[in-house]
Structure formats: C-alpha cells, structure tokens
Length: 283
Ligand code: KIV
Image (cartoon, protein in one colour):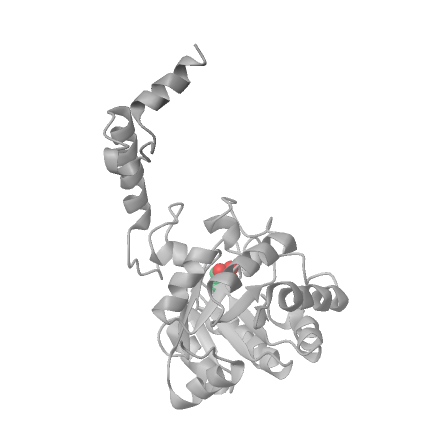
C-alpha cells in the first residue's frame, strides 16, 4: 500500500523538481480508481456541480453537496491526499463563516486541505483558515465561481497589466499562509514566473508545463463531460461513448430477448413437479 502524502511531501516534491499529479473525483468509484492509479492528490472540486449534478456552473453547489461528495471520495481513496473545494457562498461573507465551513471539511469528511478561489479579496479568509490549523490551497486565474465578473470561462493574465495583478495576488496568498497555489488558464510564461517566485507548490490546470504539477478534471480527461471541452484538456478516454454504447447494446438485448441468458438466472432447487403442484394451490 502506498503511503498517504502530506503537505510536507508535496513541498519536498517541489524542491526536488518532481511533478505532482492531481485529478478531480466526486464519488467512491472514481476516487478508488485514482488511488489505484497512484495519483498524488484528488480534488473534490465544486466542478461537481457541472460534471455530476448537471448545473450550468459551480455557483449553485452547497456545502452539504461538497461534504457528501468529499465523504464518498475519502471512502474510495483512504490513502490519498484529498483537497475539498469550498463552494460559492461558503467563505465570501466573513472570516468566521470561512473558518466554520473549512472546519466542516476536516471534521465531517476527513479532508487533508481545502481550496478556495480568489486573490487579494480573500486574503483575510486564507489567513483565518490557515490560522485555524488547516492547509489552504489558493486558486487564481480563471476562477469559475466568479466567471460572471470575468465575462465567462476565459483565460486570464494574457496582458502585462493583468499578469502583474495575478503575481501580486500569488505573493499575498503565500504570505497569508496558503501552502499551495493553483493557477487556472493563464499563459505558461506567467506560470513559470510565479512557480519560481513562490516557495509553495504551484500547480496548473490549463496553465502549461513549467510548474510543480498538473490538475485535470476527471469528466474532461475521461470524455464523460459533454457540454464543452476547454482547450487545455487532453482526452485520455471516451467513457461517455463506451457507456452509451453499452446501454444501447443492453436495450437491444432486452427488446430481442437475448438477455438474460441461462447463465444469468437462479434455477429452482426443487423439482419442476413440486413447483407445479405448488402453483396449482393458487389456481
Ligand atoms: O472545482 C474544480 O474542479 C476546480 C477546478 C476547475 C480547478 O476548482
């Protein structure tokens, strides 16, 4: 059995230049596949709103949704470093709210860390949660919870002015006590600069190669999420196609009485004669 990683292992990996592998999962089977495949980390992202619950975005996802999915993931991956994603509304209102909700991820779902979105405007929350003794991951660049303000799911930091803002955010996130930072949909040149500038691990989703590890959304990389596919996704499988074809084959088998076959049924232990006698009692 592989030893579960800690934040110290992740920091050590950055020092050694060893890339960390990170995937989202939202339920027991996906989490257990991730653990069997040897992923370093799992994120129970609020992307579950889109990938699993069928919402158009992440905003409707609740704390209770997140806790329930984190619990299932922990059951599926007991030996993997799992990060719980704080949903919209769970940390924006006050530092106190942020700490209370972050604590729920640890107390109720045994998470190793929490992640929240935003730069300078959530600094007091990052500080309050890490002062409570919780490992915090920051997340800047494209931030899906505030994609309305960003004009949609759009790459960020592509000009010098906005890149500078992201660098200031990244530095302040580290100073506030975050132990890792996720960059989403920013140019690799900016990613490289931030990853070198910060001493904490810097991970990418759609932010290129030059950093400390990569995150992918399982629904995207497995070809399960069909609404849209971001440019930064590499598709490793076509699971939606496999499942749909299996369902079609099943429908065809049932309609044409090819399923169930003899090998799929439980035959009676008593003789047919005995059964027929018993059936007669009901006639
Ligand atoms: O919820 C999530 O999966 C995320 C990724 C988009 C980074 O936060």
